[in-house]
Length: 281
Length: 240
Image (tube, rainbow over all chains, first blue to last red; front, side, top):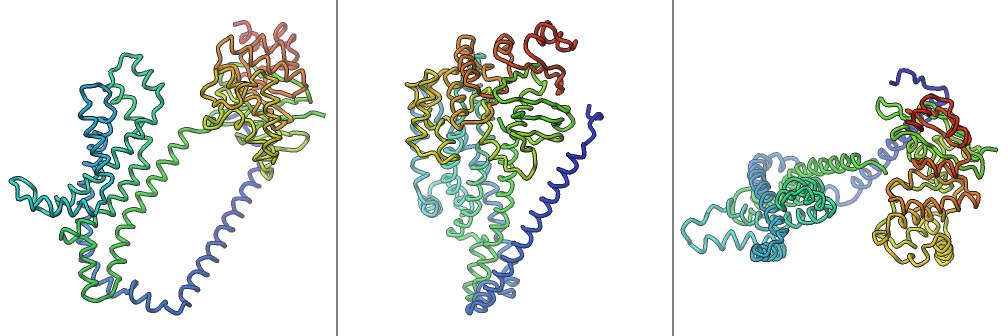
């Protein structure tokens, strides 16, 4: 099909020009980056308080001493959000779907879903962690969990499900009514339409805001520290309390960031791919 | 002097050649109709002229300036070329008046009162005087397409490209859009149309171009192409 195409001299010249421009852009980017980095480093290192800042926040010895404990604690954080995230996803989608039910018999369910999101979206996560973490054991009821990690996960799930439900709901509402009309015209029921047409399109659309909520959930797993378990923040706190050097906090912060950054790049990648699929028009 | 010269333009997507060395000149006030099957490259050629696509070989000249030169700023070229799409592409969050005055105000720096007065004149001229405050969703397809044409005209382009502008309309609405294009021809607008409306093409065009698999197989005045096509592919396309 393309065997008959030989690039003309004009096209070769054009491509050479584009390559030259590409090289110029690259070197401009390189030079400006080097200049900015050098300026920042010089300014920071020359500032009068820098040695003290370095000793308090970026103390290598303090980091090495604290890191094994902080890292062990961080595994608990990872476990907490790895358990919480799938539960939040499923429950959030469920709540969103319940809010979309139109049949009159489901009215009470719908009201419950609205009340749930209204209430739990409004309560500060830290307050919810206290309420669930200390409140439920205080009930001293049979069968209630007493383990602080489980209680922490419950509090996080309660809070984040309400956010994720709203994300799902806005995704579902953003699907054009013509899609519903087309599905119903084929004889699909409301449930089938949701299952096969609306939800698959909605999920694709809400992946970026969902990952955003998950980044938030990952951070907030540190709030479980309030209930006592030795996760990353708590471990860092113990080390700081011993030495009054704040490097362990910085170490813990870096661990959280290290987890969020790949998630953010993944979100960017998904958004770029979606934009490409839509194309121009 | 030709207003637009297309010289040996190639366009490929992956391993598929959409345009294979198309040559075409368009004189001032000339109306050119591109005909051919879907996928023959009509839309791609229009998109190349408006620099919405970069050509893979060849060159395009507008008023003797090479617009496919990589050093040229495409935005400045597009200010001189209007394009109307098959799917209207109106901005749904703006009223008809705002759709039309956006480019004159933001790109050409026309003051709002002046831009709006001009937009109202155009709307009145094309029978849409009462629609200036309406949002696109509230208009019929034919009305939306007429607004889209007015939006393209509001910047006084040298050249107007119309990409199958009636394909999404029912027959009664087609006529109101074709009426506008007829009037534009009378006012001397240079136009290139990709169209499936053969009788309209015959009626309005100065030149008909038949595209087949990315090649311009045959071109000439409507009477010649429709009544005495030389190329067997053209005959097959027109007579089945």
